[in-house]
Length: 86
Image 1 (cartoon, rainbow, N blue to C red):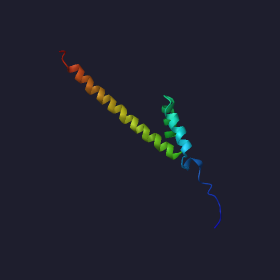
Image 2: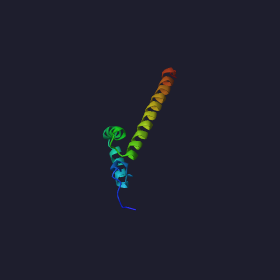
Image 3: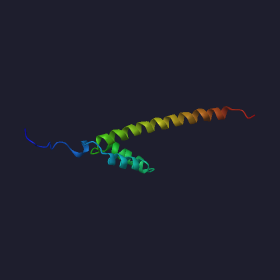
Image 4: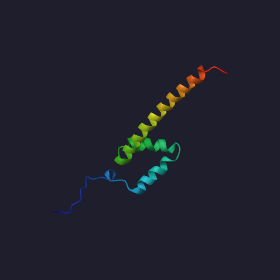
């Protein structure tokens, strides 16, 4: 057996460390920067696959939240519009 290292393994396929996740989560706390970085990390070709999947899942949850928010606003808006004053 030889002790050759596989040169096909790139740094983007490595498991993210705790420090990488802390930096990622801190960046997610900054308004507007988080949206830009989510898009960059989700759709960049050289991004870590773990971070890319996290960002794609985050985008899906954001979209679901926005749709639910519009539905709730529409329901309560129609209730308020149709209510009669006492």
